[in-house]
Every structure is written in structure tokens, then in C-alpha cells.
Amino acid sequence: MMRVERGRLAVALDQLTDALILVGQHGVYCVSNRNPRKPALDLETTIQDIEGAKTFIQSAMEEIRRSREQEIAQPE
Image (tube, rainbow, N blue to C red):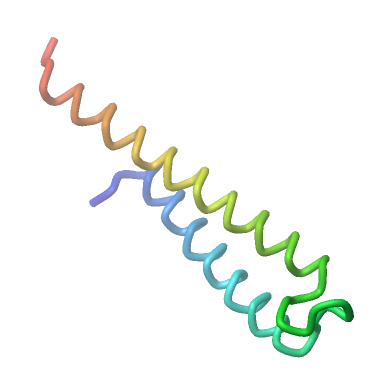
């Protein structure tokens, strides 16, 4: 339904979401010594990186969708 490119990106997005959940669960046990309400610094950085990658993939998927819609709207 999404075509090959968007489908692959959707799978990557799901995998990143799963990784984010696992890192979040690990963060419950590995807290910062300075602030016990926050995850350890390495986990916090990893979470930010995964969230950034998800945002990047979502924007790529949106760009592919827009490009496809333009192709359909402007037949050659």
C-alpha cells in the first residue's frame, strides 16, 4: 500500500520504536547519579539519537508521499 520505499522506511521506523521502548525500560534501572529522575547520560543520548532518526525517517516518508501525489496530479 505504501510502495517499496515507504514500506521499508515504515519497517525501520517500527524497529526504532521497539529500540526506543527497550532503551526506555533499561532507563528505569540505569538512572543518573546526579538526578535519579533522569536516565543515565548514555541512555539519554541514545534516546535522543533514536528520536532524531525517527523524525528523519518520518520526514523522508512524508517527502516521498508528497512527491508521489505531485506525480499523480501532474501527468506527463
